[in-house]
Every structure is written in structure tokens, then in C-alpha cells.
Image (cartoon, rainbow, N blue to C red; front, side, top):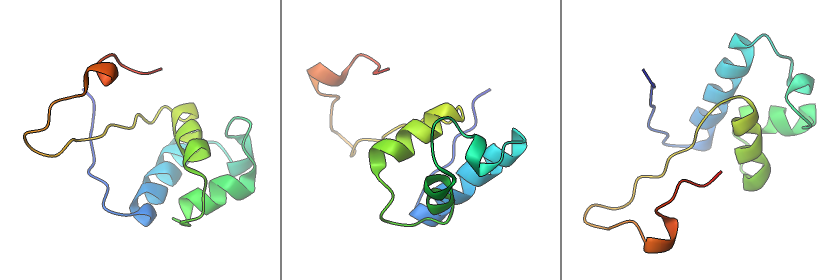
Length: 84
């Protein structure tokens, strides 16, 4: 069963990344091709972390990101297929 958590800020996202990384017994410098500085900044909730690298690091750790659209809005036709 997939667990979902609603994220309200960058610090919370960073905390989730840290817990997942530690549960996998990885050091910050062992997460894919990312520097320990990037992972440290992400885990600290630093607002200047590059979103592309954040998403890639999350993917490396097996964390899936979902976006909830505003109520009443349909998924645009070009976005209906899952992106890889």
C-alpha cells in the first residue's frame, strides 16, 4: 500500500527525504550522482535547491511526487499520460 503525505513547506519535504535516505542506510554522498551539499540543502529545506535536481534525487530514493490540481480542474490532454 502506498503511503502519501501532504507537503506544506520545503522543511517538511526535506525531512521526508532525510527519513527515507536514512531508512535505506545511505549517507548523503551515496545518493545517486548528487553532491552531499545538494542533499544536505534539500534535507534542510533550503529554498535555493534546484527543483530539477530535487525531483531527480527524490526519484533516486524511490520517492514519487504527485500534484493535486485545484478542485474542478480537469487534467490537460497533453498531461494525461504518466511522465517518466
